[in-house]
Amino acid sequence: MSAEDASPLSDDEFQELYDKARLDLHLGRPKEALELAERMVASRGDSTTAHEVLGDAYAALGKLQDAEAAYRRAIELEAANADAQRKLGEVVLQIRSTELQHEFLENRLQDKALRGVVDPEPEAAAFRSGLFPGLGQLYNGEYEKGVALAVAGLVCLGFLTQGVFSLLSPEYSGPYSAYYAAFGGIVGLGIYVYSIWDAARGARSHAQLTELYRRPTKED
Image 1 (cartoon, helix red, strand yellow):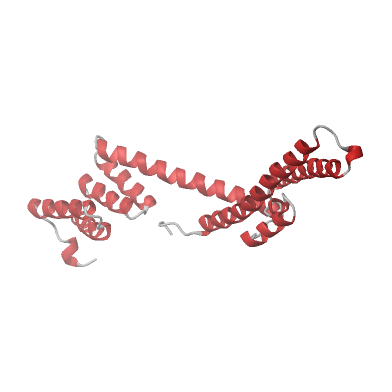
Image 2 (tube, one colour):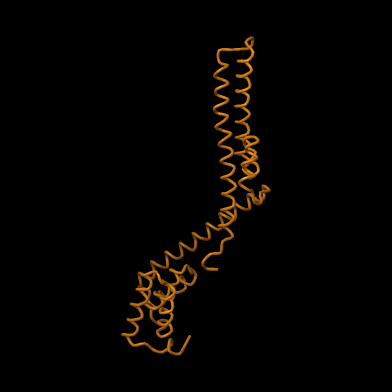
C-alpha cells in the first residue's frame, strides 16, 4: 500500500471515498469498492464505517471469511452498529450454508464411491437400461431403484408373455389374455423408456455432483 493510500484523510475526503465505494458496490464494481475501502481503513483504522464498507466489498466478491472479519472489527469498534451486526449474521449463515452443502456433496460422493461408482457415462448407463430396465441404475450405483425397475420389468414381461402365449394358443386362451398382453406391453414399454431416460439422467447428475464438489469456491 502506498504512502498516499495510508495518509490521513479529511472528513470530506473520507466521505468522498465512502460515497464512491457505495456507488461502485451499487454498480457491481466490488474490486474498485474494495480498493477504496482499503484506503479508508488504512487512513482510519478505528472507523466502524470503513470496516463495514470493507466487509461489504469482500462480501460482494464472495470472500465471506474476510467479510466476516471486517464486520466483526466494525462491531468491536461500535457495538451498536446494527447494520454491521445484521450483515455479520447474513455472512455467517452463508458460510455455514456453504459448509453444509459441501458436507452433503461429500457424503453423497462417498456413498457412491462405497458402491463402486466412479464416473458413470450417460451413454453407457442408457445402453445398459436399453438391454433391460434397471441395469443402468445399477451401473450408476442406484441399487434400490435398479432392483425395483428390474423387478417391475420382469413382472410386465411375465404378463406380456402369458397374454401373448394365451392369445396364440386357443386351448390356453382365457378371458383376460388380451388384457394381460396389453398391460404387460404398455406398462412394460413405459418402464423401459423411463429406465433409459432415468439412467442417463442419473449419470449426468453424478457428473454435476462431482463438478460442484471439486469446483473451487470464491474463497479459494
